[in-house]
Length: 264
Ligand SMILES: Cc1cc2nc3c(=O)[nH]c(=O)nc-3n(C[C@H](O)[C@H](O)[C@H](O)COP(=O)(O)OP(=O)(O)OC[C@H]3O[C@@H](n4cnc5c(N)ncnc54)[C@H](O)[C@@H]3O)c2cc1C
Image 1 (cartoon, protein in one colour):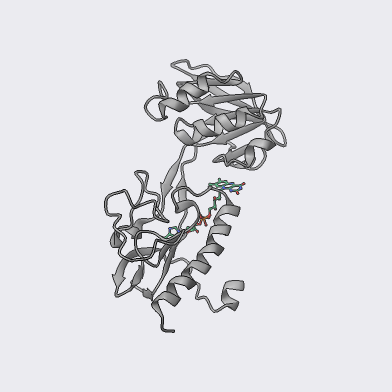
Image 2 (tube, protein in one colour; image 1 turned 30 degrees about the horizontal axis):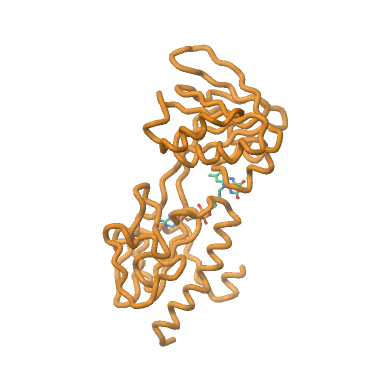
């Protein structure tokens, strides 16, 4: 309602199909062929998160089961038994943070070892933390709960048997796919996982040539006037409050770009 009150046109249920350059601005093509021209553009298209196929997991969202693990979550785990699923650096960093507050942190990894997906410095660090237990070749196959999570049921190695792991919180850090399909049409620079690079972070990468004399604005991609906010942006905190904050910040940055271009 607020967006409408300020005159924004909301185009629902028509996915963005492609983006191309249009003078100093851009043109977005929707799936039904509609073309929308703009002198600035904001990608706030989020991430398609991977979800483990565990019965009942969606019923426990917010009641012991969480996707991602932002820095703010660590304090709320004080004295708890925490399970983190995932083998990447984000999972490893979350385990380090949780270990400062939680009673016990168990990292569950499906693969044979962490080396394929996690930086060695993190692997080394995890091995020195007394309340951290890393279990490889282990996956979550079920959950025990009443009104909230009580235990994670795990299966390890080639065994067909399962065992409960008493847990107060389960954090799922198995990644996802950033939804920035239209970005390719205007050569937006991403990191290796496909997240949009902003604020000059693209400078050292291929295609990261910045064409203007001024520095890129904080949420600006390598194309002047194209911004990214929220989950799709590389380095953002994957949380609602962060996405909302970045979205509102982007409004001010779009205004700066529009005043730079002049005109109405
Ligand atoms: C299961 C789950 C639970 C979570 N729980 C919490 C929580 O408790 N607390 C918390 O703070 N965060 C939570 N998060 C994270 C939170 O949802 C995200 O950080 C937040 O929604 C990011 O906002 P965003 O605007 O960047 O992206 P999104 O909310 O993902 O919005 C992106 C929008 O863009 C649309 N879109 C994408 N591509 C296109 C296209 N080509 N054309 C048109 N539209 C497109 C999508 O359909 C979507 O509507 C959770 C995430 C998941 C998956």
